[in-house]
Length: 322
Image (cartoon, rainbow, N blue to C red; front, side, top):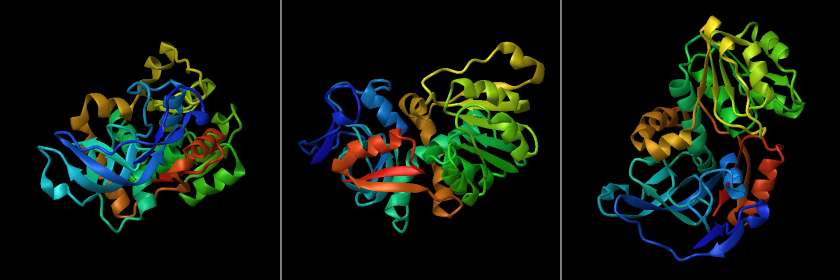
């Protein structure tokens, strides 16, 4: 099978198309013939050596969509031939991948392959943020950073579908602002710091829930507009710098800063993945959420996919087609 192999940490140049032997699933696994492989920011971090990897060499990729074509011992044979989305055991940037029981989920065949391929990590992360890191309540004001990206564009839609009164999305350009408006949110264009006052104005008040994967100075600004009893959910550090929170910014107003890693949930508490994924996938199946697709590139162009994602010019999800 063709796969993308990383043999040394670095940048996109380390993503090398390689022929690898096909394998059979072990007990508790299925083999998936991938139709779409998802490109995530975590993949960029893994290639650079800043995210957990199985060691060298490795095939990047967290989640995929495809068809189950082989099953291991202990897996119900009814899975054979089913269309599934999955969090894979051995890297999604390949023509086939293995996934373990409890980490793959059937999706209706009529769902567009691009929609299905973009869904797993985005839906799981957002639903986890809204139900585990915090509790989104009907009527809440929600602030979403990087709102035109994969996670951000999904979070805007999911928050509205779950009853948010207003969703404000921070973006870096007027072009991206148009996407946020199309999704039902209110955009704020900010090329760095200085978004807090505009965000409050767009929402008509402070926020009960803020989603931040940027870190750095944005965390301090978030606290300027986080309402009493509100939650700032932190799930990344794309800026490369940690945010700083002082305890006296929290206890007088009963505010919470919560960390969340869907990757940690999958690795250490896999039994909790299905309760997150199943209701989230239902939102995709019934049309409450549509995945925003930036581009679909051939598997061999994985390096180009990483360059595009790193450029921050993309809107929505970048996919690879094996």
